[in-house]
Length: 360
Image (cartoon, rainbow, N blue to C red; front, side, top):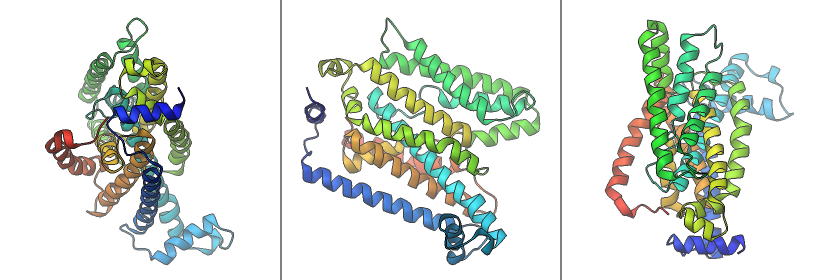
């Protein structure tokens, strides 16, 4: 059976019949509109901040770096520091993290066939938190917080996957339970480190757990950017197979798709980008849960459209939250607090909608 007919069959089984060419063309227009809104929001966010810089000076600084018409030496060094070294990499990092968490959430929800699943369900956040806490409490052993956070975040998911593996298969329910178990273990380890940490280290651990982009640098962007970009295109290309996986293992086998193979691929990629995101900015909740839902409500359950739309919505959402976090008060608010405050009402809305939320 060809991929096109497989996709057609799957979408009809999912109760989604509006798949004519014009409809898909209209969805492409919506995606382009989302990209335009994301670009405009980024342009506005880079102007906002405690230090007032005119729009002209902001974009003159960017032009000096991106075009041959201006030289960096021609602009103010203060403007260059604020715009190029502080605000711009922060916005790019927010975009990368928003994309990572959103598409990871879309993948997990599709594979687990559960609308309440988020990227941290397999213990990524707890493992990364333990690694970050190790780096904070033992700085002589771990000179960087990001490295142990990434390693233990990835190890947590690997441990959950191996724990759930039974006779060459990985049942979804068993995998979720294994993720809960591993997450609880790492959470206990974090509590032990918080209990034994000094006051300074304890404050730093708590601050890291709330998530934020305060220390964003170009090195962070260079670290996560290529990984997120490559993973995004791979997962987008596997969107129709994710549609098949959303129907269950038996249906997938009936359509000639090896569910274990593709579950391993998509979960590995989703875990990779989630671990990268958490290791760099801490735990930012709700993005991976909310954005895939919002994408489905706008464009339907087809993951070929859910993945790119969720990515742009997640990037847009984090830019807005981060801008609020650094402009609402004189002292910066951790962005994880903002996303949680805005996310809780959204979950209440989803609960009230019940079965009206479109999900395959």
